[in-house]
Structures are given as structure tokens and as C-alpha cells.
Length: 88
Image 1 (tube, one colour):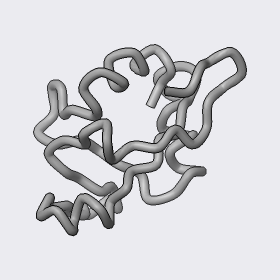
Image 2 (cartoon, helix red, strand yellow):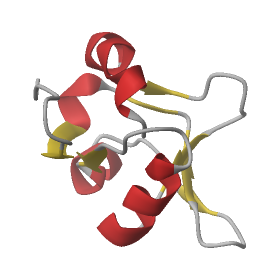
Image 3 (cartoon, rainbow, N blue to C red):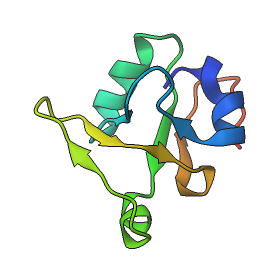
Image 4 (cartoon, rainbow, N blue to C red):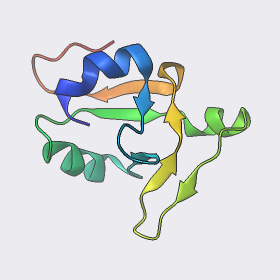
């Protein structure tokens, strides 16, 4: 994601917004590339295995993007932050 979205993500996790689902990248390189399209990129790691254990479903789109309805803050780790951006 882009760093400008972090304050809201820290409050409510990842939400679909105008989309039907939250879109997730499978690897850090792709996540950085996607995030850079929207500003200074931030990489968040999703604790997907914990989510699945709690019954939260994921789907993989034909283009390889992973989809889910929402990602609560408890399932997020702050992996890569640009200089000057504070972690949670």
C-alpha cells in the first residue's frame, strides 16, 4: 500500500473500499511495485495462516492476486516502511 493510507489501516485494518475485496500480493517485490503506483510504498505482511485457521476465506484471482473481504489489524505485520514513516 502507499504510506498515505497507514493512519486509516492502523485504525481499521485493510478494507475493500470501492472494490469488492481487499487485493493482496503474493510476494514483497510485487507488493512494493503495486504500492509505488500510489505513492511511497509500504509493505504489510498478512498473517494469512492465522486468518484461515479462524475461518476467514481467501481466493486467488486469475491474475495471481489474492483476495479476501477484510484484514483486521491483528493480522497485520509492518514489514517495510520508507524512511521517515513510523511503524505501528
